Length: 302
Image 1 (cartoon, rainbow, N blue to C red):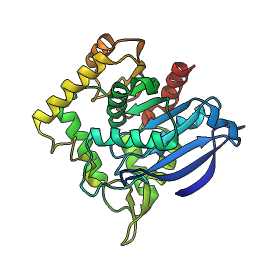
Image 2 (image 1 turned 30 degrees about the vertical axis):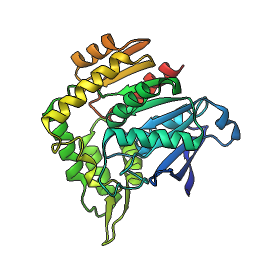
Image 3 (image 1 turned 120 degrees about the horizontal axis):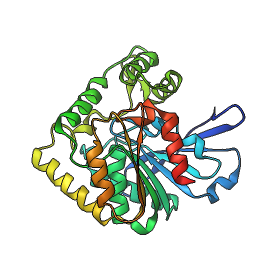
């Protein structure tokens, strides 16, 4: 199902088209897919890169990154269920396994049998599980500020911020102000453009965010300590079994992925793995310091 096509400027000389569609999956879920591309058909023959966003975000959160890869790759972003233009789960099923199943079905529908993944936070968790389950389908992978053993206080803080953001706004600029307050190091224009893509008109006036408030249920404060421990154990086991070429990228001030955990991930993960720390950035590196993250991603895929 076609949604919209519009052009954005990647730089002074290159116009990038953003195409949004809604793709029905065999199980009944429909996912929003964004593709950034130049104005020519050869893009479909290029190696595909799929971006996966964090909790409470959408594919458009990669606006400062994805358009800069279009000259060499086919670049797509997925709105995970409950986010952006994707369906909300009637059963409020927002488990990692369900996100992974959606990505499996979507890549099959799109005919993409070998991709590279870039996943932030929740998207990083989905990427690790997908790569462990389907190593033959993953060319390479970037994990952006995600890892096991996240302190409960940090997880609760993030979920509280997502919950507090689920309200009615007078206009898009109101939410852009929230993003600027949360990411004072970020580019104001980029944050404003992202804010505009994350909002829709509310039924009773004003604007609201596009994600289901229930998305935090399976990974937020409502998750039990045992569930969190089980997920941590599973993630460590997955990393130990991983053989995909991988980059681990963390923000220097991240409260989610500590330097010690990132180092342990690097030492434990098999195969070709690198670790890079981005300066002047916290957990949401793509909002805090898009330029440096973009440079790191381009180096990895070079």
